[in-house]
Image (cartoon, rainbow, N blue to C red):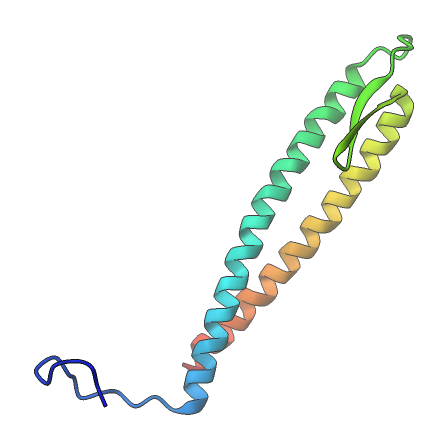
Length: 120
């Protein structure tokens, strides 16, 4: 039963169940890839901020005993310069690992989509 008027109805293309499943899988992979790319963009921007902060902390005066305001989670803490640098290096490594993981997932999605394109 169709809701279209008879003049608007086409011949109707039959799609095999397997092909429909592949189309659905392709759509899921495409959506997942889009989400991963958005998240990658955010993570790369955050990493750039940390890189800028790293440069600023390298230029900071070690003889100045004034602590540095550093964000950990949702809160800000005053840390000595050495501790702030150490924390920053750990955070940079964490972001690099997250970015590598997201890039790996993006490649997996792209490879899956390429395989499905060949089959469809």
